[in-house]
Image 1 (spheres, rainbow, N blue to C red):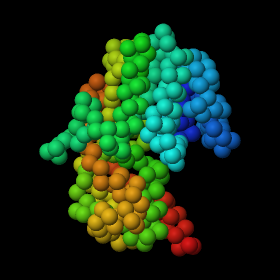
Image 2: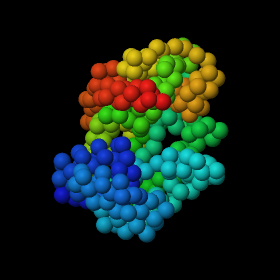
Image 3: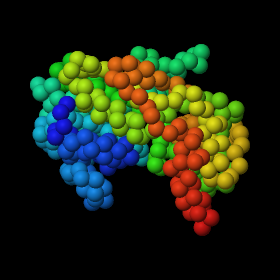
Image 4: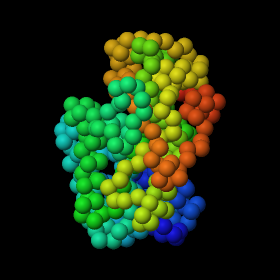
Length: 327
């Protein structure tokens, strides 16, 4: 895509959205971002983007903005937005599906790119401990990832209707500058006064720096309708696949200045919460060979362990420990 074109984004004021906006504006795009609050308006305006008031249920807004845009990026996470909804899985799939349909309605027949966001963890891990790719089978419907599987499948199904849709799968650990999950876990450990991992902590996780992930979205837009990628394709946005849960926890412990130790899964869930325990014990080794080969994408930012121990998470650790000391 040429520059001076307009992107419409959901999830624009979120962690990844703000980085995509910063890079997009540098490349000459204009960006309109869905915004649910005055504080989100302020974030977008400060960067130079245009806030558009609404949420995933504002279907008229989604249709109007997607029709006016040259490209659409769907980043908003219906699961996180509705994490306390008692209707659970069905609500997430319904909310996201209806929003995706509204966005697609504004793009029908235009060949404009429509990028949706998914997760690498929807793919079953390799039983031999090797890496997986975009073609791997999805985890079963009984897992916590079934909503992601359903949402991605619905969005990619739009390719049959002539929508230029493509899915970007993000890994469990998107980091850099104080990411939500890593910062949240460090906050738990700061409050406990110790950093915990389950068993041997040998579970491998996949990581990517937020800036590298943001560049992949823009690279997909740049190469849309050139024959490089086709509607219905999926790309993993991942850097390393060999970091272990123990390595991450020990790095967090070092940054926080607290001890690290092994506990049972049950103790980890009791002390750190079930979400943390499950998140930190999910095997994920999803490689990005396809993105590198097809798009020429190359991760180039600091490794997650370095970032935690000597980089952007140093300030996060200091803030969290000071807050814990006041309690």
